[in-house]
Image 1: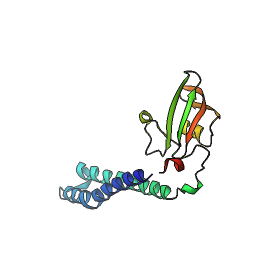
Image 2: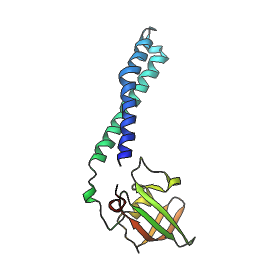
Image 3: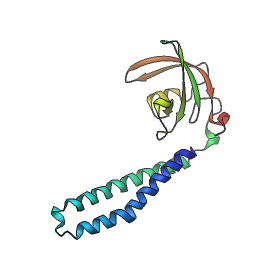
Image 4: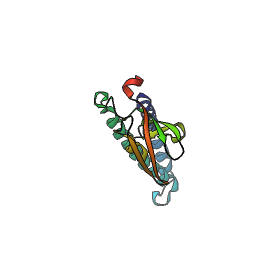
Length: 156
């Protein structure tokens, strides 16, 4: 979770610099070209400024939400944020391992599943031995949770 906060803060710092230093210079240069109603450079800089202000607000909101995560409230016996789960897929007769993470950390190729994704929502609250039906755009699949390591056991 510290990694996510660090990445978000780094992106926020880049946006702040662009908003405070680079964009004001661009806008000033564009204004020097005269008529603002037909000034593409000015319009482009203002659109970029608007986009960055929106992204800045999103990042600040996300960081505030992450700061509210209370590890003491994350269960020690059920799948939740930070848990590693081992699932047995009945159809393929194979096991697959996932780690439940935030949306910013998710990467399916690395087995990092967002707790807000369809798979993540299906896993949250489940225990070893539970049968799980996961519905994705590609259809339904049935699994059994064979292993669970919570964030508490992982020491993160």
